[in-house]
Image (cartoon, rainbow, N blue to C red; front, side, top):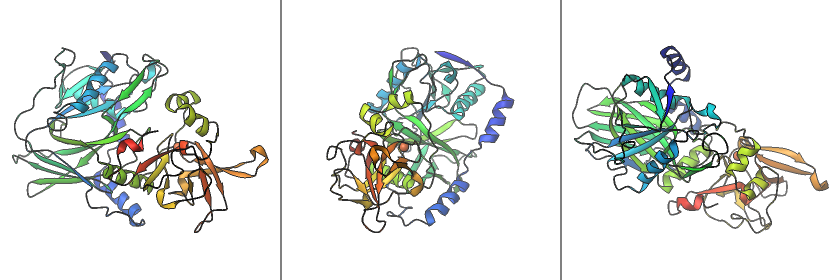
Length: 431
Ligand code: FE
C-alpha cells in the first residue's frame, strides 16, 4: 500500500470550482447544436443498448490505482478477474479510477486525472482519515480492506434499491432511476465510460519494464443532475470524446448516489458492437473534439508495434496488397492506430487498384493535416493525423467524384471499427 498526503480544503475547493462539473443541461444543448447540422445515419434518440439493474441492490466497487505505484499491479490483476466473475454487473459494478498523485515518482499515468484523486480525497475526508493510498478499494462508499486481508471476495449487498436504467443513444446515456422506496433523498447520477484490455508498457518509475493490462479503467466520468417526475428520476449524460489510447472494448457504468456521494444503486455492462459503433459515429461527427497529443519518441515506441511505429512515426510505407484493409468492404469507421481519432468512413472508400486502402474524403477535414513531401524527387502531399501527427499516407488529385481526391493510406496506420452489430469487437482491435 502506498500512502499520500491529503491536500488542504482551500486548494481542493478552488480546483473544483475551476474544473466545474458538466451540467447535463449544458452538455445536451451543445450536443444538440452540433448534431442538428448533421444528417444522422441512425435515429439519435433511439437506444441501441439498455443497461439495467434489477430492483435488488447492486454494489459499486471502486479501485483507486496508479501505473506508477509498485503495489498496484496485483490489485489491478485481481480487479481484472472480475471480468470473468458471475457476479459482474449482477451484484457488482467495478470502476478503476487512476490517480495522479504518484506521477512525480517518474511515470506519468495516462489514465490519471486530478479529479479522480479529488474523488478519493473526498471519500477520505468523509471517513475522517488523513491519508489516501493506492491500491485503495471503496465498496459502496466505504473503505474496503478485504483485499488486503486476503478475503479477496467482494462483500454481498442486500435489500432492494430500485431499478436503474442507462439507455445508450447516439447522443449519450439517458438515465432513469425508480427507487424502491420514495424518500426525501435527492439522488445524483454518475456515468463512467470504462476501457477494457488496455495494455500499457511502463518504461520508467517503480513499474519500469512491466507491461500492465488495465480493465474497467474510467476513461470518462461525469456527474449528472437528475430530476424527479412521478417518482422516477431522469437525466442525460452526453457523450464526450473518449480518452486515448483506444481500449479493446468499452463498458459503461451508471450509478446513483446520495448528495453526499454514497452509492445507492448501480448498473453496468460491456457495450455491444452496435453501441460501440454509435460511440464512434459521435466521435466521427466531431460532436466533441479530441485533444491534441504530444508524446515522446520513447512513448510512441512503447505503445506501437514496430510496423506501426515505422509507418506512423518514421513516414514508412507498407507494401501494396499486404495490409489488413485494402480489400476490406465492411461498413464502419477507420480510426488512427496511434490515437484513435476517426479519420475515414467506409462510405468514402473506393477501389483504387493500388493495394492500399483509398478514400475520396476524410470524415472531417479538421481530423487530418497535410504537408508537402518532396522526398524521392516526387512532388507529393503527405497526410498526417491532425491529432497526433501520425504519418498516414498521401493524397493525390486523381480520385473519383465528388472530391476528385485519392487519399492513399497505409492499413497499418489505421484501426477499423465495424458499424455492423454482427461484427465482433475483437475484429476492431485485431491489429
Ligand atoms: Fe492520430
